[in-house]
Length: 321
Image (cartoon, rainbow, N blue to C red; front, side, top):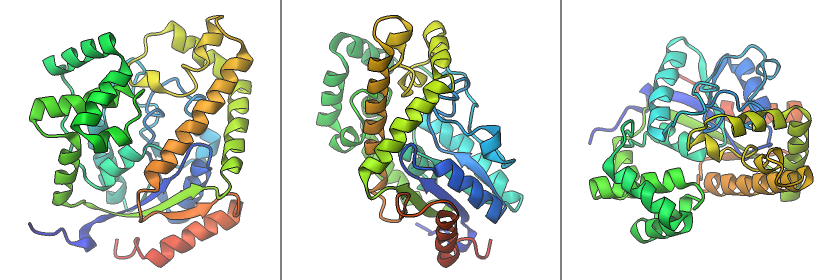
């Protein structure tokens, strides 16, 4: 197969890392320094209305830098990885065509990899009999049984997908029963086509895990102070799609809004689930050997930005654009 010329690939700066690691602030500063525009790869910031729960950047935080794939989809709608890739490819092409630097930022590793590694996934815009059958089985047997089924069929996918993420579990099962191939096989096979992008990965984390967890705990307290409970009330009162329902910050506080648990109990549960989510994010990103890690407990503010710029300059990824 003919290899794509590296010089013709679109350079992309990807800022990855767990929640509360400071990705937004770094990406905006890099966009200002590199004349860039920002494409989010956060699977929950896509949804309208879930602003505080998903820690969307405010207008003030954006500092006039264009941001894409934020608040694009109604919370009642489903949105797939395949749809995200389709949108992201168009946005990247547009940003690049205007001579701007493409900067991707987020915490959903699957979205980042699907785009930058050019993983071709089956589109799932229509309902299928297989999907309906799997949903019925999920209601009857529960998430754990469906995850166990996936583990037997596709261990690699099962390892990467949490059993409570029933949308992705069912999708992986649907791909297998519909095509005869596992979703892992599909991903590996699609990589043979090469990618149209030349990514430079920068990751944010902390050497001291407790430092990150303390930031998460403080962020949760700040979210509640900033009106998260009002978003939760709307979440409880309005129809929300299967994907948006998985947003951390809404389902954990719903029992308080419904009068079933105390605010203290629900807040502690939210902090715990957010810390667990951060751990899963780090597990995903650390499988990528090309990520240049920066440690937020050792480097802050201008020093962090300067180090990221040094990495970008030394990589020469933006040359010959």
